[in-house]
Image (cartoon, rainbow, N blue to C red):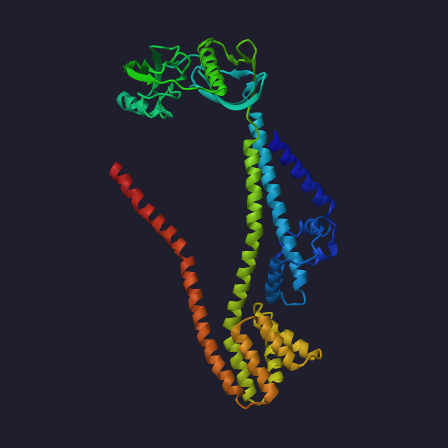
Length: 496
């Protein structure tokens, strides 16, 4: 029930918070690019949490690095604004994940709650005539005078009457399996100090196992051991398992040597409880219900039965929290990937950029005029071209010069914003030409252009390798489909 309550509380909190904060900074949200910020409907809530609850004011080291990456993608002027939206987008994703997992936990938890099998606190429904034995997992509270114990108990309820026609495996193999399985925590049948696992049915089969003990007061049919009358010399007990395979029976005699051991009160309670459940399960097979015991002994130990609830709901909530944390940090990896793609794009565009600039300067233009010519050509073709980071940074440098900033400062900032060694070297060449008026500018630009074309080939080769790797999975899937198409008709013809 706890998991359902937590899920409901979390769902209501998220819904109420979204409704209350839906108009928070509405003007800014309305102008956002809906393709870039797909969770824009939740972002007012995220911004509200950032401002009013978390009160994020100072940048951490991680935030500063993210801001630098955003500046590389969108420019320095709006990097702070983009950082705020970036954090809000991550919080929106976490809200969506928590809402989804809370809803899923609520649905599954409610479904488990509806599938109840404990009636009036201590009554179980017996399986029908055509059904097998049913195992019920229950939470048991054992109340004694000194303490209260909470245990998980598995109660096996037999059907109203046992079926006689069953499909079973070979009895000899099952007997060998039984000799090993019943040991439990014991080393061998000659050194028994812990309860034996006297199972009633071989797992994975319909072989029934009936147990007889030469000393049932020492080892009962459940394998529980009463150590109080066992001497230091130990005692031999003969166990006779009867494996039933339809009308065929296989009996075997197992000699067990039991040695004394001091048992705890908890083990004694479990032994008495299992003994009571075994007796209860054998009686009243014609009844439709099984009434579980409410006490042990003369009322000294009280038993309170309950169904385990909400385990799946709580697990789903925990998974949701874990996924939220993982995705929160995974978004930073996504940002790093975008920055790497931006750097690759600049490296691909740089050789053509520097070649055009060198050609214009060779034709007699100054650096600033050649620069202006390049960005004007880009602006004229911008509607037909995709967003090019190199040319956008060049436009920023041009606007800075038009705004009164010196060319030296503008070109220096251009190289720093690009954050690539080849671009910083390029800006240094331009700055050196402006300062000293060297006549080797064209030669230096041509030399760096050749280097840039070489690096472009390396980038193109890397992109080609990545593309071939991405195609590997579809190719393998197509190969598998072809194999299935060829093999299925062949196998069908062979079977005919």
